[in-house]
Length: 467
Image 1: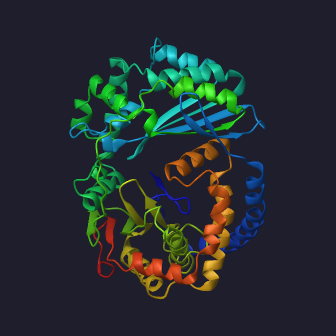
Image 2: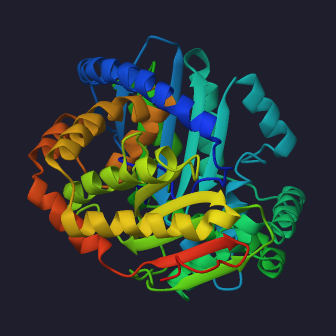
Image 3: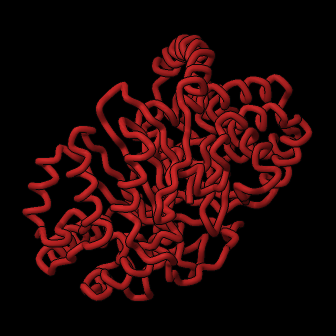
């Protein structure tokens, strides 16, 4: 249900390539940034490990949460997820989960939309819900002194959403407006094409927003049915960070989640291997071309996950020293950014490379990307690359995942979803350091020798680069 915690997002926005002057300045900034990051990487992991104690708290009704007590600021953050996201949208009702998540703060229990929003403001709390393909996430950030009022509102939203017709129509109109606008957006059109090509008729191929027709077909009864199927204790993971003790949290967990049904009623979703060896062109007359490529991935639970994660970071995991960054950005100035990511979902895994470049140099850029991948697959990384990448990944974890109560709560939920254990943060460095060069070479050969699926968004691609 997550993209792995070693690399960036699945996609990156298209950006203009840098001028030679910017590339030169980038080298100076690179040196400064490397020095600062080196200092931070030495300090932050040790501080985070010493300062953050994670407790597993189970309420009398059997609701479990991971808790980090922190009284440095009088704030409490809660993050939770129910398994089953947009993959649970029935055929012809695509966009149902997305629409539902827009309605939890639009009235619950005895409070209509306006009354609920007023109570939320009075409590000084922030509430949000969102869907992914594999889960329905909820979050709340509240002042510790008003946590009783805030948790009561969360209880109402989780257990008794009203789904009144007026808010449904209003949120539906907002979603529909976005769908219509996106029909002419190259990025959205391209990603929809990509999903259909890579996932076929699997639920992952469908738009989370839905279509004009499917959004119009959703009823109040559909919303209630999806809520009943998904919101159950059996599919729940919770993390709480902030100024609250374990005994108080137990009472709040039972108040918010304790009366939910014990088990979910989810539709079965099959695992799928992304379809590779395809060439997709989404033709638009644009000055800039986006490139996206997919290779096989590796499951988060696989024994070779850590070698694959280190290999991905060396390839293009977002650092200044990745091979793709050096060849595409530093040496040639073809793009501001080029990234690779190991993408892990509940039912599919992939390694994705994305970049954007000037359209008249798109074929050249694609050829360079493919050459970098080919060389890494054939020869693997060097000992020096592996040592530097291990150091970076160990140090970067605290910076990327533990910099606020909200980000800590989000990280703890993802660790639960991946069944990594409450002491994973202490064990993680050992897993990384144990990886050998031969294991990383084997991961590169295993994942990168396949023929990728390639998508080009922009003018028709000329000449080299298709092969």
